[in-house]
Image (cartoon, rainbow, N blue to C red; front, side):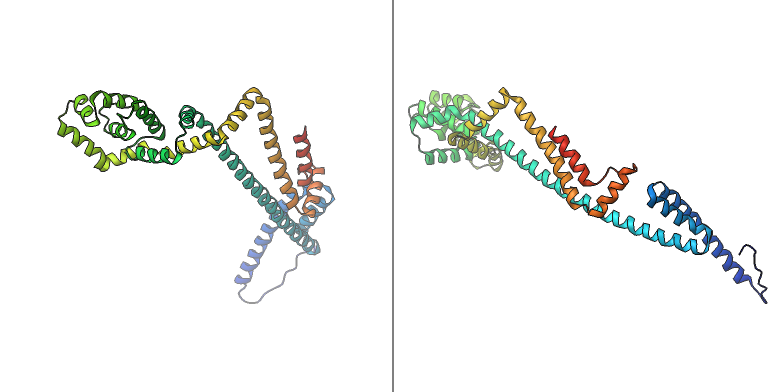
Length: 331
């Protein structure tokens, strides 16, 4: 087939010549593409890579060699598709493990925040001691806290108001202090409000005297804080953190605060243990990700990855990476 063969054609052969020209161009383009593929395959190394490169290159030599090249190229494409699917499974397995670890990390964060909440119970030690010493009725204390919240008092403010009321010998009640606090006219703390109520013999009298109002104006001030919608919004803001304070008080009473503070004290005395635990957790997370990848990788893909490692084009199988990662974590 070294010599060209001319076949004379009768009539107009324009369309035939155009088709032949187009086929020739397509063949040349295909040959070029497979030539590039041959170059890429040769870089794989090893007997398999060389065979694939020679097979692809055969396309440019025509005839049977081209058919062999196409066949081997098809096999290579199928192999690449297989490896891609396997890599996707491995990637998805690692992603699932990462998501699981993120959930675990979130759970640890929640526990740390819960510990911080419990530790805050220490701020209620004085009030809790007085409640226990007086043998205060928990139900009655809750009703007082709810009443104080109506006027925008926090739980801690209500407990201080209760102490002030008891210290006043009955001349001032917790409710009186709550109303006076709500007006903002006779003091900003339960102690200051209670002092003015005692001094002027009543909330309305205290407002009239301190704010320089008539009795009618003082009565109107009290009515405003009890009925104005804007005052209700302010009251809601003032008592918004009451559920947190109630949880802190409960933690203090139950012993949770003591346990948390004990752990925090140990961490401060021996910070290395906590840091080592955190480092171990991170190392274990990495090992678990590698384990998930190794379990998801097929035997064939692992074998091919090991072959690639030998010739320097792969990090090896996921199993090998797991072994290396586990050894590093243990060191």
